[in-house]
Amino acid sequence: MPQQAAPPGPTTGLFVNPAAARRAGFEAVCGDQFARLDLADSAEAALATPDLPGVGLLVIDLDRFDPELDHAGLARLVAARAGAPTFVLCPFANARWLPALMACGPVEYAIAPLDGEALRAALAARLAAGPTPLAAPSPRERALDGLQALRARVRAALGEGEELAALAERLCQALCGWPGVAHAALFYLQPGGDLQLQAQHGERNLNLAKVLGRADRLLQSPLRHAFPGLLAAAANTIVLLDDLDKSGEPRLADALRGHGIKLVLALPIPSGGPGTARGSLCLLLREARLFSRDELDALAEIADLAAVALRIADMNREGEAMLVRVTHLSTLDALTGIANRRQGERLLEGEIKRARRYKVPMALIAFDIDRFKDVNDRYGHPVGDLVLRAVADAARKLVRASDVLVRSGGEEFQVIAPHTSAIDGLKMAEKLRSAIEVTAMPGVDRVTVSLGVAQLGEHESADSLTVRVNAALARAKRAGRNCVELAMG
Ligand SMILES: Nc1nc2c(ncn2[C@@H]2O[C@H](COP(=O)(O)OP(=O)(O)OP(=O)(O)O)[C@@H](O)[C@H]2O)c(=O)[nH]1
Image (cartoon, rainbow, N blue to C red; front, side, top):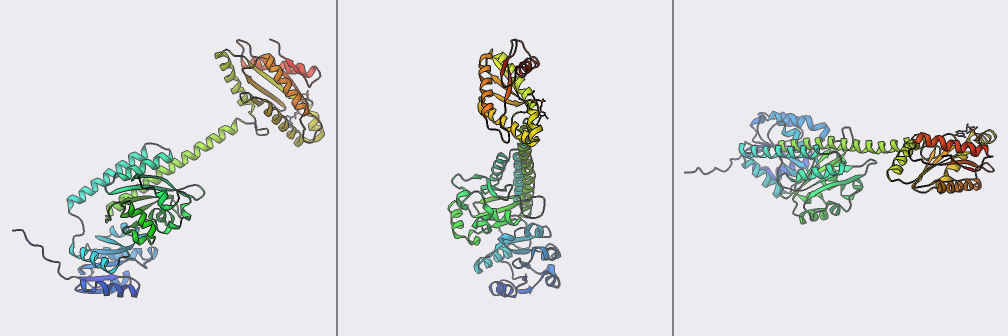
């Protein structure tokens, strides 16, 4: 015959909280659930209780305790129970206490505040569970296997690639594979302090941007104290909301309930330094449930892994942006902003190859400011610099988008002109000459240029083309300046 389980006998209890009103309140609501209930106002006072491990249930109400000051004392208190059960009432924004207390002994918890009836029910359930707080080995093993699988999925998701948006999306997908998780989101702090909803995955109809009213500047959102994903990032702490009404935001609670969500857990993504977190991982579950220490530890480890992977993604993003900038800058002439000599040489080689492959003409124009030494000598170098810029600007306005304007030397310029014959090159050079002659020059009456034009020969190299065009330019100088000369074939 199966044995009928006997109802739990009355047991003794010890309730710890610094506020007299809370101690009195607990005694009034739950005192009759114990054979005897002692009250203590601090961890130290509770530690002085004779035969502490013999007390049937220790109840720690974390409200009013200070995480910094009281943590060590409460951890000692749980350890002093020598394996006897402890029940913790934990405000939803104080969930970070739980893993540390769970590390010291068998701790179960309820997320506070609870009304009188809920508190009595939670306590009765705890008392009925008896002295063995851990689940039977096989469900626990199953739970550990589940965590192992979650870790593996997250590692795979994070190992796959380095691009931030894709990484965040894959991480949310992996988290949704954990039983009970309906939706997962990643909030991430952008440079400049803007917390953004970086990625979310799960319930198709659930859009957290809608629930929160926006997807960016979330640290300024009115819900930053109520929604665990925002609170975890802002306060750098684990936040567990097991009853949506405890958020104090009825609209938020209704919106989440409307999608079948009963519990929200958020973990900070550590920044590696003091202050705010880099963001948070946020899990939305369909059932309210308790989390074991193994689970909270595993989730914290996942947040650590995410922090490293996201930091690497950030660094890659910064590195790429820097590389693009440096590469771009290294191709430009600092004074005029047009291509510098090295870039000009590279582009000329490229255009010559293209012209040869597609059997199309190509011209090179070289021009040089006339008597520029006099400008410097008479008006000074700064004015000379302004003139150089003005000449470059005037030329830039004239050339086609496919042409490349190059500062090839001090006061020497080139135009690499694809699809351009000698005749067209001459026309273009003449346009440049006349435009520069009439361009207003800052601080100087008038500036002219001399120009040489050469069309690429059939088997000609870049060096040979450059030598020929410079010879044509030298002839233009000898011919009296402010004129154009065509290079010899
Ligand atoms: N202000 C300024 N002057 C420069 C720069 N680069 C070269 N120069 C000057 O350009 C002048 C070039 O003089 P020259 O090569 O004698 O030629 P030029 O006076 O233009 O005479 P022609 O070319 O024969 O008409 C020199 O005085 C250089 O110092 C620059 O970046 N800024």
